[in-house]
Amino acid sequence: MSVFYLTTPIYYVNATPHLGHAYTTIVADAMARWRRLAGDEVWFLTGTDEHGDHVAQAAAKAGVSPQAFTDRISSAFRETWRALGITNDDFIRTTEPRHQKVVQAILQTLRDAGEIYLGTYGGHYCFGCERFYTEKEIVDGQCPDHRTPLTWIEEENYFFRMSKYQRWLIDYIEGHPDLIRPERYRNEILGFLRDPLQDLSISRPRTRLEWGIPLPFDDRYVTYVWFDALINYVSALGGPGDPRFERFWPHAQHLIGKDILKPHAVYWPCMLRAYGEALGRGDDLLYRHLNVHGYWGLGGGKMSKSVGNVVEALALKDRYGNDAFRYFVMREMVFGLDADFSEEAFVGRLNADLANDLGNLVARATTLVARAAPAEKPQLSILSTEDQSVRIAAGETRHLVERAMSEFAFSRALGQIWEFIAVLNRYIDTTQPWALAKDPARLGKLNLVLVTLTDSLRFLGIVLQPFLPDSARRIREALGDERAPNLENAAVGRIDTIPPVTKLSGLFPRVEDKKVAAKTVEGTPAAGAKITLADFGRIELRVAEVVAAEPVPKSKKLLKLTVSLGAEQRTLVAGIAEHYAPADLVGKKVVVVANLEPATLMGIESNGMVLAGSADGKLAVLTLDRDLPPGATVR
Image 1 (tube, rainbow, N blue to C red):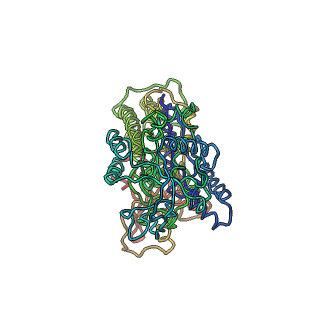
Image 2 (image 1 turned 90 degrees about the horizontal axis):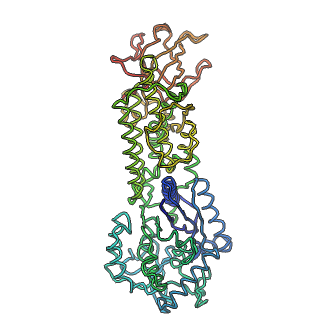
Image 3 (image 1 turned 120 degrees about the vertical axis):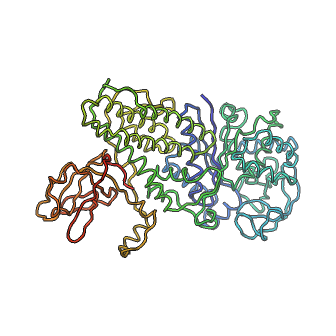
């Protein structure tokens, strides 16, 4: 068992949570869940950063005290994480006494060690970033992040001797190549450190700012936001000497967005090194990894509270479901790179990956197994090439997902799991268990297929748990698997029984694309109008076998058809009674539109449409010139 300490940034409380906050917290939650799944002892921290100019200004604008303002916004973050199912072990606020106590203790230790001094500084200040910018950093006279005018401020403040640690920091980063990940951010920091490093202003005079932690050695000043905020990672564990700190801190990993890279990759390690020296612990207090992700954009621009182009996390979750939301943000963004959000892309992934791939697989497999009588020791055939390939694929999937997660490569991990889902869908199409069920002589082969499918769903119910916790739980429940999920049990080939299984359909219902809906409202395109390949791809065509047909009472044109799509049967109502007798259709393989909205005709709900051609009053349903199994995709 390993020990694992993971932190998100503490989120600034000048506004309520948005997609950027949600992404960071969701991937942290997925990582914490993964490490717990692997049997590790995990401590997962998040929280809120509540001091500084910007908070004081926002509170004044709202007409409330800073404490009342931070109480309200901090509660909004807590509630958002609760609604998103985040499993943090602790939530820290920088206004808490436990945090203030540790901050003041560290400040006093560094002051006593000569690492903090009183000096005068003048510079261009951004109230949004709560920092001074050098001439080199300023863009067109404005803050490079907010693109707002800067304010010249000259005042006496306390400074941390950060410049003395520049050479040490360069050597430490070069000696620990995976300290900052991905590598592009390590290179960015090394590039920044080519220029002389300045000492860091760590205070603000109370004549200008009251809202902050007072310096323990001079109560005319409050602590500068970064020297306050960054210490939360230490104060949440009680600080050096606390048993919890000594257990978890050596395994600390931070997860941040690239907008706060420099404070975490420059200020923080220098602070920790200085504090470690003051305590006689040297580099002992350095974190293990700094994991950095990119920006979410909307319409090509950075998502920002100050610009106003944010997406409310809970609105997306409520509209599409928590697991769909988690899946999209983890799958869409390659960790470390920027990504764009659009609702079209969201719906596309939901329909293609979740509804068509995973949801369809679970529905097909549970329907097939649910039809079988549970058997403790069913007659099994010798493993075929197909069965063996599923077992091998499961082992490879677990190995590749473990490797991806060790690198915080969430999108790659999900991609590997979806490769395995594709293997299972092909396995069902190849083995055709519906055909095996019709041949008593092939009962052993059928049972082996059903055992393999059940075991594969158990595997998915485990490895999907960190990413899609609700769906993974529903899969395990459908299989009657009451065990706590554990990565050690993620393997295929360990069972030889057919358990009682409950059919699980509709795991991820398809969502109609908004643009497609708009086109429908506007009317049917004119004959000969062009559609895109993407438009055509939204139509799900399947092979269906007619298993029963009968006239619809009081209708001359309609027939009620019962068709098999392999893993399920559906009722369709087709206007072909004037062209086909019911007995002529039974046993035919036809092509149907399988993802059509249900419609009620003559009191019968129709779930699909039979395709047919017509000319000169004649009609013919589309059939196949070669045999394909029911449920096969038509492209």
